[in-house]
Length: 90
Image 1 (cartoon, rainbow, N blue to C red):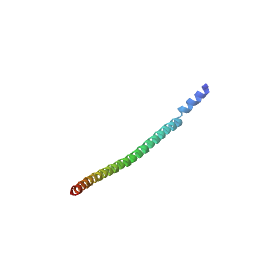
Image 2: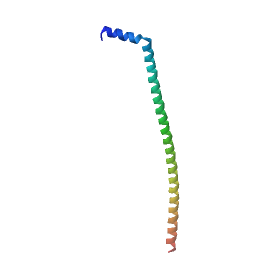
Image 3: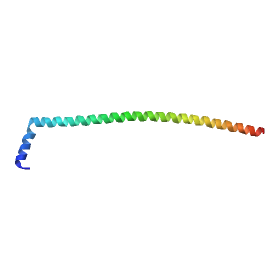
Image 4: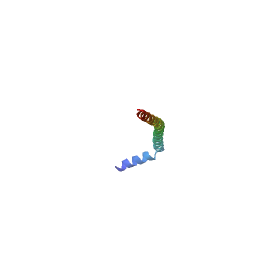
């Protein structure tokens, strides 16, 4: 850059209005980044809640299946006992 360009830049950069504008721009960028981070955290929290709910539903379904499996196993044992009785009588 030529020396005139540097002088012009230094004059503009030293202008209080330019300094204030640059400061406000930095604040706006910071606020935008904060808002985006907050929105991302809210979305993550929402999905974590959904996942926890689904995990609880899966655990409940698994417990119900285990209960039914135990009931079926008990009935199978009863059927085998009855078959053995019938074989013994014949």
